[in-house]
Image 1 (cartoon, helix red, strand yellow):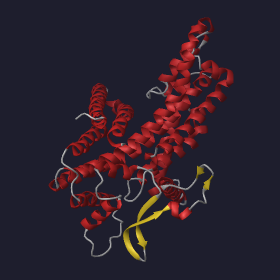
Image 2 (tube, each protein chain N blue to C red):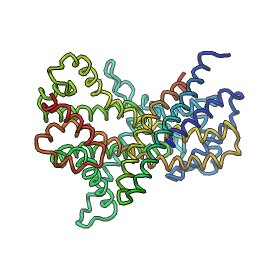
Image 3 (tube, rainbow over the protein chains, first blue to last red):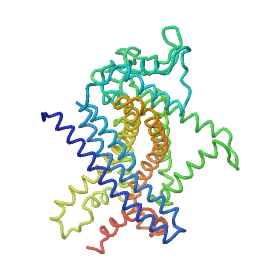
Image 4 (cartoon, rainbow over the protein chains, first blue to last red):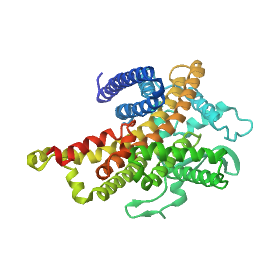
Amino acid sequence: MLTAFSLGYLGAGLGAGLAVIGAGMGIGKLAAAAMEGSARQPSAAGDIRTSMIIAAALIEGATLFAIVVTLLLAIAK
Amino acid sequence: MTAATLVTVALSLSLAQYGGSPAPGPEAHGDAPAAAQAVEGHAAPAAPAEEGHAPAEHGAAEAGHGGGHDESLGTVMMHHVADGYVIEYPGICHGELAWNCDVDLKEVFGDRLVFGAIDMTPTKHVVMMWIACAIMLAVIFGSLRRKAVVPKGLYNFVEMLVQFVRNEIAVKNIGARDADRFVPYLLTAFFFILFVNLFGLLPFAGTATANINVTVMLALFTFFITQYAAIRAMGIGGYLAHLTGGVPKSLAPLWVIMIPVEFLGLFTKPFALTVRLFANMVAGHFVILALLGLIFAISAWLAPVSVALALSIFLLELFVAFVQAYIFTMLSSLFIGAGLVHHGDDHGHGEHGHAGSGSGPAHPGSHVAGASPGHG
């Protein structure tokens, strides 16, 4: 039986999965670039790591926007 | 990303509980909060336990305390994160030592703090915020009591943080000339967020930054300071001209598009600040609770795995508490620096040029290029 609630749960599950796909691709590209950068220029590894963490936190923040929406779908009645 | 992944896992598992068999029995409920107690005990093993009570019984009582035995994982999680008037604490109540005392702030204050439509009765998060701020003041002033040229101990740590915020965040994003005007605000925001985040990880405490009202207020401070700094640096005319996005007068019809976009851009920044801090703090608590909830959603035999996972997430949360304080401060100084950039332009690029490693100067740089008359 597809009720409005079950559709909400379905949407929450799909949305959470999509958000993680996006975050995974974002952080993956970021980490690949950062590692390549610090391999080519090991002396800059510290700076690269700092900006990588900042960018990772920003990407994660954007992902968490989506996750909060899915949480609201799943938990709030 | 790891946090996002784990929230997703947790979410799907809490959904699985809805779809599966009816809610587990009360005795199954007893285990998870007991485990929560155990995990949180690692961080601060301070909860005085009443003698002769097994931890499992504590847990069962806690589950019952949450508002009934028939609640689902979702309501337990919401109860843990949501604001309310009831503060739970271990201590002395009803004349004996107990671990699950509670005080209802509505009963304590009654109607004394209700002014017409405005209810000023402090809620749980407000009280937690006060306590966290009191700890913050105690730590900062306590460390300042023993000043020394060669810092050591707590003073050393506080000085390191202060120096980091000034040199690595403020100076790099705002520029050495203007940074010191904004360092007091940035330090306030940094230490406030840091202490409230860390305090929320203690057992029985609440995270005030997991309340969107708190983060909205913090973001509004940054918003108003940014606007004030921009107007002071550029003058009201320059500020309004900035809202055209640098499109020259000869292309005035484009302003119909540019002004709404730039105007909206003013508000997306504080919105992003708000939701980022809020979502990160809520997500961390949800992940820990959901991992512990696995115990009674699936099987009690899962307890070691689930507690180990929850403990590692707890350690991740300690890191996130610092990172979010850093990110909020960094973005605030980035926005302030972006508003000041025209001012800096008049005096040469020297200060901003040195800060080239961050993403900060690059972003306002584009504004400068667009707004300079040469491009008209």
